[in-house]
Length: 117
Image (cartoon, rainbow, N blue to C red):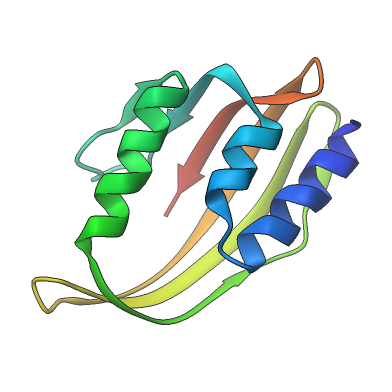
């Protein structure tokens, strides 16, 4: 798959909340995930660690009010998009966040994801 095809597929899957398929189809087993400043865990490596990070995040959410995923912008082996979410955490905190997500592709798979919020 090309960078554009991977970006389009990621957006398609994220817009319907199918993150598991994103990881299975599009990510390298050795992918690195880097979170923005203030995140409890800044960097994880490998698919197992990324799955665990996603599971822990999901378990913190009480209710999603809305979310959106922007169209990708391609730059060589990288692409970027915006994601936003409005949710209530289980501790009652309402969180409304917009982040820029940057991805690097190598050999037809995402090898790096980095989030800025």
